[in-house]
Length: 178
Image (cartoon, one colour):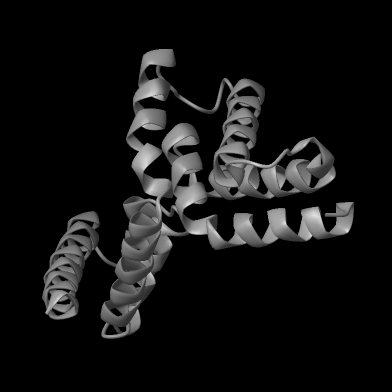
C-alpha cells in the first residue's frame, strides 16, 4: 500500500469514527469546541504521520493520537480547563474502550438519528434556547436578557425540553428495538 492509499484509509476510518472520537475527546477536555479541535488536530497528525502506522488496530492508533492532542490542549489551556487528576483521565479512557466497537458505533448512530428526529418537533424560541444553551454555550442569564424572560423561565424551558426530548427518544428507541 502506497502513502496516498494509507492516508486515504486513515482518513476514511477517522471520519467513520468521528462521533465516537469527538465524544471521547470531550470526555477528556470537557468542551465541545476543544474536542472538535482535538479531532481535527488528530486528523492532521495521523495523515502527516501515516507512514508510521503499521498494520494493526487503526482505530486504537488514532485514539492514541487523539488522546495526545487532548493532553496538549489541556496543557496549553491549563488556566482555562479545569481537569482533575490522572485518575479521572484514566477512568474516561477506560470507559470509552467499549465505544470503539462496531455495535457501539451503530448504537451511537441510531441515537443521533433518533435525537435529530425528536428535535425536528421543536419550534421557534424553544429550539433557539436549546441550541444557544448547549451548542453555543450561552448562559441562562444572557438568554433571559436577550429574550426578555426571567432566568427561571429559561431553566423551565430547558428542563421541559430535555424531558420531552428524553421521552421522544425513548419511545423511538423502543420502536427501533421492535
